[in-house]
Amino acid sequence: MQVRFNAIELVQLDAPQLSPSIAEYLQQVDRIVGVIANPELTDKLGEDLFRLRMQPIGFLDLYKFQPIVTLKIWCDRQNILHIESVDCHLKGLELFMESFELNVTGILASQIDLEGNPQLSGKADLQVGLKLPPPLWLTPKSLLQSTGDRLLSEVLQRIKQQLLKQLIQDYVEWTAIAP
Image (cartoon, rainbow, N blue to C red; front, side, top):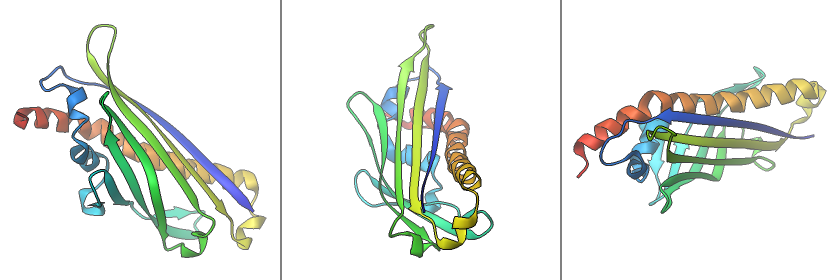
């Protein structure tokens, strides 16, 4: 039985008016990765490639696994930060990998509100598809769907909370040392 789970999360933050601007800060990809992910669980693989080991996750009290995701993260010429998944591994659920599919996309952009104040707004979309093992075929599909969607939503909410708590603080610290 094939299933798909989805979650979308939006974020909007007011930013202080400092120099360099919040738009220029979005070019500091390494710093932003350090804000949204635990640096001890993150490896830089290339100029715009990062491997993130997430905290272990439980599913229906039957399975415990650790997602390890490779993400391409870059800032374009319009100072829009982009995130795209490149690869994923489920440590602890290797049997699922043959049919497992993960797609992550996200953006974070600076904008000016109606009063001329800087803001950041973003959107993240997380989708997972996989073939369920026979023991889960007896579980009601609605329970599987709601549990899977909730799990993905919790992952995105944790990242959003990190952004809300630390991104502006890191931006202010960066402006103090930026040329």
